[in-house]
Image 1 (cartoon, rainbow, N blue to C red):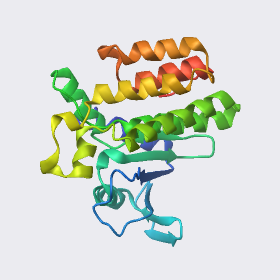
Image 2 (cartoon, rainbow, N blue to C red):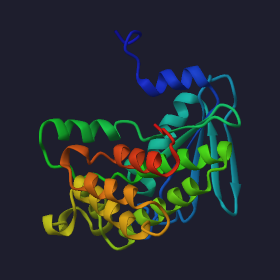
Image 3 (cartoon, rainbow, N blue to C red):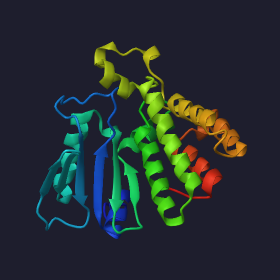
Image 4 (cartoon, rainbow, N blue to C red):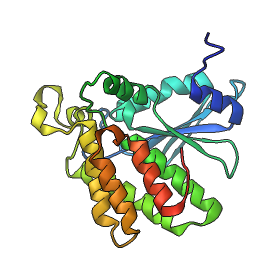
Length: 247
């Protein structure tokens, strides 16, 4: 059964090969649990085998840890928890120059989906999923030089960051920021409210940069509970802005 129904990310990694880079999203509102960690730690995972040696590179800009496949999985968890949360880790697989496969942390989407299908309230951040979409958008623009899509991706990242710094947080991030015992329901937003806040923020900053139809679509999406998945929001924007299909 495991051979027949393999984990999708594993299938893609095996087919593409290359190196998988994982790095945390760092913000002033989510301080690292290890206070000495002031700069980014990037974990580079060789997706094609375990025959190579591990290496580390320490520079003034941060720390890069190059690992074998299994060892890098353990180190990714360690780095994620040391900074704040595994849900704030983004990944990018680079098999060759024009190709990139970006994804969010494993089991992040699973948690959202299980809550959603059982009608339980979700209050888990979707920042990594949004940044995953913007990274693929920016990578796509290197192939077709679509400047409007570059502008949109930068605006989306800026909107997410601004809301985060303004304390429009979900429960998991609020617990990191304030502590487990001090978080109350009125202190945070659920997942759908958080995504709607991003959509409304984008609607306010994109009116002059993009067509009015795109703004109308995204505002409608933000008000529709069934369509409030972040990948749909990003996909709709991408289609309106540059006719790109980004998964």
